[in-house]
Length: 151
Ligand code: ZN
Image (tube, rainbow, N blue to C red; front, top):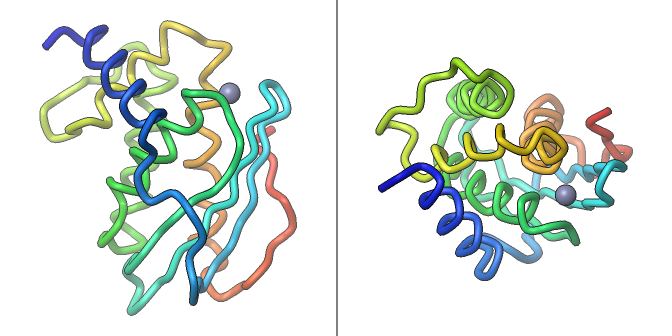
């Protein structure tokens, strides 16, 4: 599948039917993210057990790219250890910002996020949830943290 086609299909699909969307009971970390450039708001909740993301869900109100990226992220990191999830964050961050970053099969649907590179103004929309995740993993036992801005 062409990357442009993958980008369009995956973003549309995950915006229309966001995965892991809604509240999460027994969350061990709750972090809010805000992207002032676009107005995207996101609340990310996760349940860490033995340093592994046992469950992760999000709520919020954002553009198609921010919603799709959060949906893809929850699918990608659920079940991963904190270290693995942060490594995925680093990979996606390169994918979003580095034109030279390789897109390979191991990325699965996350490869679609590389399409955002074509729209520099939307990179913050796509990276919002990932920065929010990194903040959540930094303080896993905090119930409520102050809002985190990606600026
Ligand atoms: Zn946005």
